[in-house]
Image 1 (cartoon, rainbow, N blue to C red):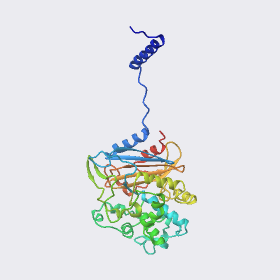
Image 2: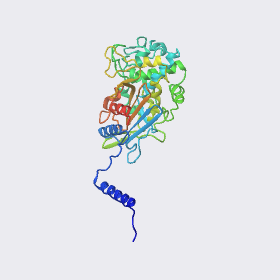
Image 3: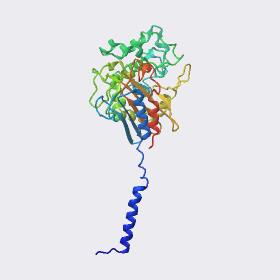
Length: 385
């Protein structure tokens, strides 16, 4: 018969007690999931729109993380990741404004000069006089020029051919102004189409060429592009839908050249956050020009959203502020913001109805402000978990 020493008996007793305690004591609490607040915010945004998918990408200095909800393609289990492209709509305006500030720094453009100086004869007639509208008034939406989006995206004939910037601008200029220059504020895509035309006039190169040379290549934005000659997107994109319960895939339905320098850009969470982070930390335009860009219009009819030159201010629930832009395009809504200390966030959902149902409604024509994704975006930016 074997025997057991006292130390061994004690060890057995302790082990038995621990095992029994394990059966009766509450289990240790698991660590909370990372970025739960952002995940909840993105899930809520997707649910509110009955969207197919949603995602958020955040940069904090050199660190990048993301969360996903739903799928980027109906009927498939595909995450909405930081590398997946979306049609980012009016986020394009911030790119265009940054390029204009670069040209101002190079003394190629005077923001207080008239539009007529750079585009002679273009903004004339039908109540317009380009001699009385400044470049700055284009960038801060105080020109009074009619928004071409009010007609372009709602008319099927405009999906059948490509447009030049001049042809897009003409769609807006065919309608009378909202008000005299400087006497109000009204979001208008025509302003940034004209800004793109000015960039082309002073550089003698196409707007897309300048965008590539000035921003895309220097920052290494590998998924950012402006489609030309095709409605298709390269592999690695999020599909865009209209509808609720029953969905129509409109990813390749709307003519992208209608967006142009106002809304034609395609980008991703990883690139949008990289661009905004670089912009807000002074790596795209010099600090003095950045301060000018971030100075909101406060004159007659100033909006509640605090709009600068192609960029909006976002108060943060964790204190301080961020700057960025909303982006709307049929099938998509996106939001990208950043802070001066190097944090940046991008959120997106892949359902938007330009005709007033479900997701964005008439916001396509008035999409300069924080938009419907603002809560999720600032939640992500403040999420340190």
